[in-house]
Length: 337
Image (spheres, rainbow, N blue to C red):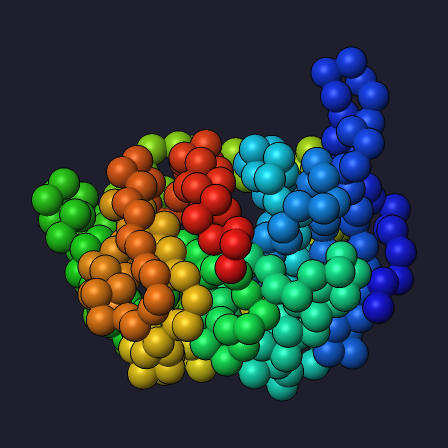
């Protein structure tokens, strides 16, 4: 149940003349999910529009503090809901039980949130978008509870984590050799191929060079941009920004090993609602070829694979205008479902 607004806030949606859009909704709330205080941001120009829930990546890469900067167009057609998940962002606390950082607990939290949103706005189902780790959670949700969702949008879709890391590592090593970057070659050969001996520490080495060789972000200086948004965010206090980084580290530490055993082809062979995959053409964080291979075998009443040619792992932010256009089209195609 809702616990009310916090000291931080979110901007109201206004007309060009400065008046508040009459049917708009802008709420930053603390709610109870899974017996923990967790935070959601609700924004939309019309509270009668369909609900779109975003499941952020990571695990632990909360996005309430910066996502609204990229979602203005989506707010025209949806009630956009961002959720800082258990142990992440505004929802991070040192009191979060470590043994609850499991996929099953996140599924339970998410369904509780979906039911809360449906009850609050008088809906029977919502749209669900999952990015990266959020695509693991999202895929499991729509597989188990298809009746609660209008459509699924997978962004940087995770498929098989062992294959994921093997391909990602080889890509970075090949790029390093092609550029004759001796520092990168030395660092990558030192950690060796996954599975890594020092799991998180070695992973961070690989991810550093993945960023260097444009396998995470392709064209924009996205991470610098996000850092600026976090520091200037109305939704996040300075303390929340600190929690963002603590939550990211905490979530990765306690969930990464379990994630490495995830295989989407076995867990979710079928999705009984329309499924759309928004994939960066240059993504080697969650390699695009794995996403496409899964897409080809997936059973679904309607499925579509949408390339983002100027993106790597973050098309929702790297090409936010195109992403908004795609979501508007999906809404038109599925609103009668």
